[in-house]
Length: 209
Image (cartoon, rainbow, N blue to C red; front, side):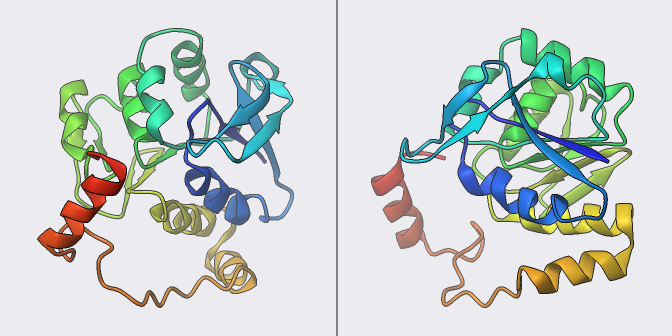
């Protein structure tokens, strides 16, 4: 099985690295990073880069496609090489997946039309602009599309996908291997659970989401 992980400048690292740690460990699986412009692709913080050696055209028939979000997503919304590739491989992939605002890129490419999908809470309602039904859920599976909500939800999405691909036992073995057993010290991980003060601090430090 080949998993193609799409990168672009300004991606959020955990969006793609979390699922990579899960899906890349499945038996007989090759995880490859692909980009419209191969080479060093820098994340949204500018302090981490991944050396992508595969152009999109080098991976014409992946089994799974994953695209994450991040501030750079805004530059990936216009129709072009990436959107064409997504539409082409969507005809044959087993799973088309996204994390965070990566679902907006899939939506803009037209592959999520008429489907339910999720995204980061700050961008969720934008899906409706592309004839996609926003779903306020951590993981949404609709047909062969699997979308994860914001950032850390990519791990949950990948584990759910791993169960469908390799079986529950294998997925749980991977979960144990990466010791994914969240016990956060705070309960501010959703817009509903975070106080208004926390939201104000978020906007002050990081800008609107």
